[in-house]
Image (cartoon, rainbow, N blue to C red; front, side, top):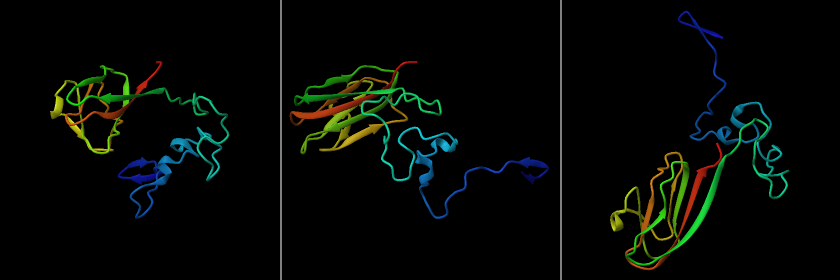
Length: 162
């Protein structure tokens, strides 16, 4: 403890690495969240692949720390007809992630969340993708391509269970 103006302050456990914009300790799964708990996945040995020591088909379930990943995903491919708007996803307040990928090498995909704005929506360039993670809206998703028939993929991630 150190004395600062009459009050005692406990020193932080975090020590920044000098001249490093990214701290690899933040995503180090050998000690999740610096908790002192055993690893959530894998053996925890340096250089061990993610999932090492897990039987094939094993659910992530609850790890030794008590944390459980309750997200599930659904991948849906679409074949869009030129100029026809499609409601790809309904309203879903439990949505925690969304990936919208344009599989076409030449045509641009347009999408909108909440209401169907047609060709005035957000553009996804040929071969590109958009990712929503922490700020994923639960609104309906509408997709359209005005120029050609294209293939797209939508991956929705949502909270399951409680």
